[in-house]
Length: 367
Image (cartoon, rainbow, N blue to C red):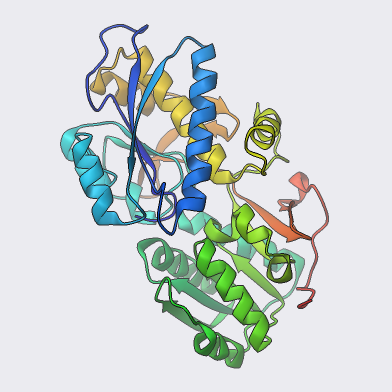
């Protein structure tokens, strides 16, 4: 499963017969394993949503399952909950499923009636980064390096297609084996291709290693662009020797004016001692929407699906409305943003009207 393996399925066990009864929500997330840092953010966002839902007299009974970052484990977990993280199986069981953050294009391009996605797609991740880069500078060439997973391949393909559409020449395009101990030889090839900008798709452990080894070999393009995921994580930002000046696409920052966003950021910081990520915000939003839809439908799956299909919500993640467009089904048109890490902190730099600080352009080089 791509970034943000968590998917929430409504009323997967016993459909409640009264609105006052607990709404049962199944949650499949990477609580252990290589994606645990992102999984932690997702879990934290959900827990805060459950607390706030209780203030609205909506009691959520969360049933947690750990996929350990492995798709095959996620299959067993979802089957255990009477559904599964893979959209196709949720469709088979007719269980409304809300995807907070997984971005692979195909998830909402298969005509599924029961699958809804809050988050943007890999195409959106690529577009916002490349539009920003073309606005701040005049790059002519692009290098693409992505992990060889669904998420990575989808992200790399989206970047290539959009770059060519915008007149950028792709001079390097390669998928690497996730979790490898050494990427130096691949990065040397990137350096030899001499791209003006480098676009990467990685989770946090690989993102850190890729940047450490980029520093070692002296890879220094006009800009490093990270397609969310590992590059948008607080753990990556703390690696100040290699994270400074790196751009990352994101679905949410505390700089947005969406209702409740700043309050969420403050609460999250106080509760967990770290900056809220977009993973936390989108997970909060998915739980917030799904639990209300299920509660209003008294746990009835078909009514919950209909409520999700026809609803519109003003949330800390912006306006959420599931629509059918451009081949997508039940896809939210999400506003993307770009952050840059400056001295260990995330600064919102794009779009310009939402800037919380000025961008550092071009890449300042290695310390």
